[in-house]
Every structure is written in C-alpha cells, then in structure tokens.
Length: 283
Image (tube, rainbow, N blue to C red; front, side):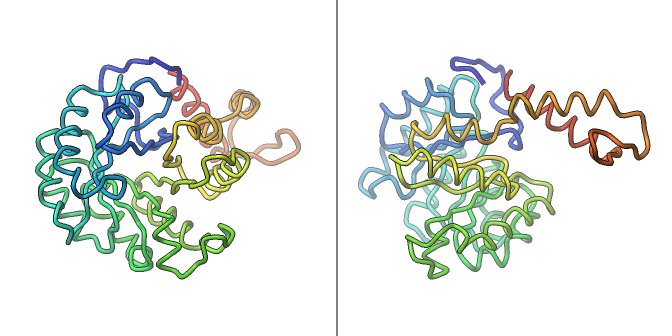
C-alpha cells in the first residue's frame, strides 16, 4: 500500500489483509496525527497500558475525536481497559460514542467478556489472548458472535506462562499456534504480538517471518520504525506472485504434474488467494 492512499470506507480492507496494526497512545495527539501519515494498515488508539491513569479522561476524549476525524481510509480501533478496571465502563461509552470499526478487548479469558463488550459497544470485536486461561478458551472466544479476530498479547502471555523474557520465542510457540488454530477454526483473523526491541531490525524481521509461517495474518507493532519490515514480511513477494500466476495459467484440471510436483485444484485456490492478497494490498 502506498502512503497517502485514500479509501472511501474504513471497513474496505478486510482484516485478513491487514499486515500491520500500530498501537498509538490515545493520550498523545501528536502521535495520533503522525499515524495519519504512516503506511501502517490499521491504527489502534490505546486507552490501556500505554496511558497513565490520570490521563485517561482526556485520552478518551482524544480517541473519540480522532476516530471521527479518520485515518486517511485506514481502519482503526480503540483498545479499552479490561473488565475489572475502573475505566472499563467509561471506555465502552467512549467507543459507543466514537463508533470506530473495531474495539479491542485486552486480557480476554472467557467468551463472555468479548460478548459483553460487543453487546455494549456494538462494534466488531478483536479479543486479545494474553494468558494461559485465554489460550485454553481461545476456541470458544473466537467463535463468540461479534468477535472478528484474535490478537496475541505476547508480553503478558510470557509472564503468565512463567517464560523468562530472554527465552526464545519457541518457548511460547505452542500458545501462539493455539491462537492461530482457534482463529482459523472460527473463520476469523489472527494477529501476532508486538516486538519490544526498537533497535533490532533483524530480530524483528525474523520474528515477523516466524509469525507468517505460523499462519498469522499480520503483526501488531509499537513503533513506526517497525512498519516497513512488518509490511514486507506479510506481503507476498514479487517472485511468489509470478509463480502463483504461472501455476494458475498452467492448470488444466484434475491432478497434474507441474514444475516437478503434483498440483490439483487446492493448489490453484491457494495461488489465487495469494494473487488476490497481493493485488488488494497494493491498492
């Protein structure tokens, strides 16, 4: 996608095509304004962990105004505070007033929590899976009416599992794959968690590639410097698109030999999906 692109409808880009979801503290108007110039696919206005408790009243007002002003055609969401926090109800009222395309619910451990937020806000709901209980219940959460995506909260997930911060990502790979499995079984999108190091582009690229191979549709990010790397990782490469087009053109039906391997209609469907993804992401 190109900078400055305009879309007539914030919901035009399907979630399964979103590569980058940028978290922006709703307490920082300048960061919100800058987000409008960036090439991320999706903007998350955060009312939770990145906002100090004493700043949340103003952050709610700023988030409402920002949603109404729009993000140059990009879809957006407001991440509210979770159930049990003092700001939970006020945040849902703000979401209802702002009417963003999506609301993000943190620390979801059971389907009822997502159901309640969807019922109050009347917004498409993205559930963050950030704990062992959330992993265990991920399939029920993903199937809850109104839930359109699962988002991995990898920092809290590591802590909840007792995985040291310096442990390799393979230590939580089963949990991450469980999120993808739950999302795919329910037919909703799945997004990988953030990468914390702001000065390690190689590490970010590696983690993005791991997430893509696990099946995640895209990645949540916390800094503008991560956008280009994550966008590239979750975009079909030029050679891959050309190979997909060639496979589609060569297919004549049934099972056949192509380029040293056997292909059938399933492989053609995969190739068509890849080409469509590339075309939509370029638009």
